[in-house]
Image (cartoon, rainbow, N blue to C red; front, side, top):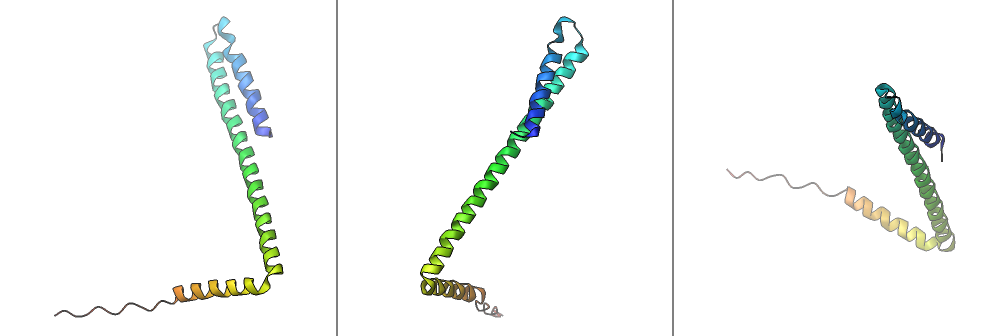
Amino acid sequence: MNQDRFAGTAQNAAGKLKEGVKVTGNAATQAEGVVDQAMGAMEDAYGATKDAAVEGAKMVKDAAVEGEDILRNFIEKQPYTATLIALGVGLIIGYSAHRPAPPPPRNWW
C-alpha cells in the first residue's frame, strides 16, 4: 500500500464525517463531505493503479531475466545449433527485405 492509498482513505473518512453532519443541517459542510469522499476514492484508486503497475513491471522484469537465462544456457550448451538458427533468421530477414521491385505497368494503348 503506498502513500496515495493512505491519503485517499483518510480523505474519504474525513468526507464521511463531514457528510454525517446532517444533524446540524449545514448543507455546505455536507456537500464538502461528499466532494472529499469522491476525491478520497479517486486518490485511493490512483494508488491501487500505481501498485498494480509496479507489480506488473516486476513480473515483466522477472520474466525477461528468466528468458535471458534460458537463452544463455542454450547458447552455452549448443553453440553450433544457436549459430545455425541465427544464420537462418538472418537469411530470412535478408531475403524478405530485398524482394525484387514489381515490373513496370504495360502501356495498353
